[in-house]
Image (cartoon, rainbow over all chains, first blue to last red; front, top):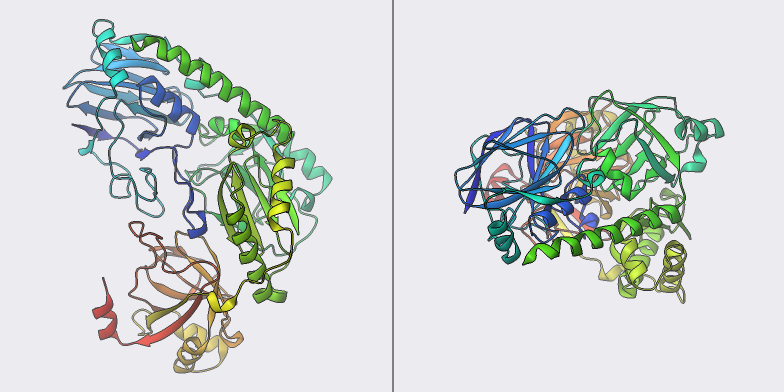
Length: 328
Length: 236
């Protein structure tokens, strides 16, 4: 069975947890810019965490369903409605054949991730269903979705079928994901960073500036990176660096002195000095930046970054066990 | 040899600081390190990415911890394991084993939008540019920028030409180009600032293929001149 995107809004693309193992060929990892949000949304509809869903950038999206599905979404401050129901982020909801889901907003933030039980069943390309918008492959014909696109859906998982029966009257489940996971917009965000590979190529006042002053998100930000303006970041040398690997979270500083925080669609290599790296657990916040937002950075150790990741994963495991209580 | 963290989920193994000084030697050291790290199958390592002087080691911290690392000791354990993988007698990567790819190129002016510019810069004729370009032997030092874009060393010094200060918005797929002292080929239509001197009908990157690229880091590349008719016939 299918769903039809009757209105594709500003930018909707098919994404999953990304492409691993092809960086050596210049292929970005891509995937949902907030991988954690995509996983949570998938768990809430009974999918495997790696199922493909939709990444929505700015709202004005409508989606019609041909058959019964459970849906869930996480991300910015969107308003999501079906029939007379309003579906909050991090909730599981039953949609019926013929229902049209509308996604509007966001009041705050930038992106949202929608999971549909069964997942979007486009073919896997290089191990992922994610759309590579730069390489033009994966997803649906390697492009952003357009009005009228029809997408194939996988079969509803067995556990989803049980949940569907339980939701037949209420439509929206009583259970939900923790708010900080499903509603990821943060007021006055402070992203935690570890020192970059080229930290020592910057002077002490720049070290201080980058970890204490506010930066502003510039309009030409996209899935490749968030462009920032703020205090001038000065290097202590002017050597030409040899290009080497970069990754989502890398903060690189081009000669303009205005840093770029790389996101999921970033290139695999870069030759600009890397002053810092946003830690994995805070990439969810970075995925919500829009032009004009202010952001600060604070330094943590890599050990802290790993501890936070382990802690989040443990909480996620507890959440999954909690969800499985609804299987019967 | 130096190992530094690239964020909380990758390490960069730096074989040496500069590339130009000894590019052949550096490349074989990088390839040797890459092979050793591949063979070591370090638990939690999810992919390796070579580039010029480095091999990046991407890992999943949670898997490294599952494999027995203390949450406070992930980096230390990985550095130790990488060190073990790279220790011992250096096996030089055998050049003879490198795969050689021959790339057919049509240098007709219709495709070679910067051939005149390169010729002017080198103070030779466009024909001589083509002859020099075809006579040289190149090696892939890195793949990046866009999926499948090869950065090639081996460009004759005479042909080195500065990039355009304002990049073009659209360089057609298959464009064979010169950027400073490096040669390259644009696998898909993309913006770019390199000097385009011809076009290949080959599809350098095809996500439906395995591997998706025609050649990999370390491979040798040569260019062969073809006519417009041959170009047409070779197009997929």
